[in-house]
Length: 122
Image (cartoon, rainbow, N blue to C red; front, side, top):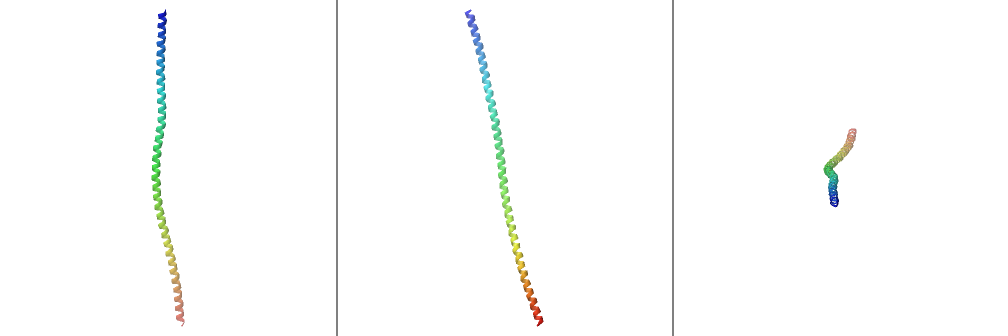
């Protein structure tokens, strides 16, 4: 009877040991799965952040190129406007000069007419 009890105890111990080993393996597998899922979840976030950063860098580069082109065009427009403004000033000066000459010619014409009339009357 004692040997049967020992065999029974050893069988129960072996069964418990197998059950414990099975549970330990399940726990290790569950922990590995959890770790893998957490890493995958973090990797998705990191990958998304990397893609967003890449897209932002490309857009910043395009914005810089656009701003540089805009600055060049603005400088060209300013130069063109300054030239146009100078031309308008020159036209104003020419017009003023022409009016002055016209007034002088009118004065000379009037003086000549008066001189001619005076010389005819004598």
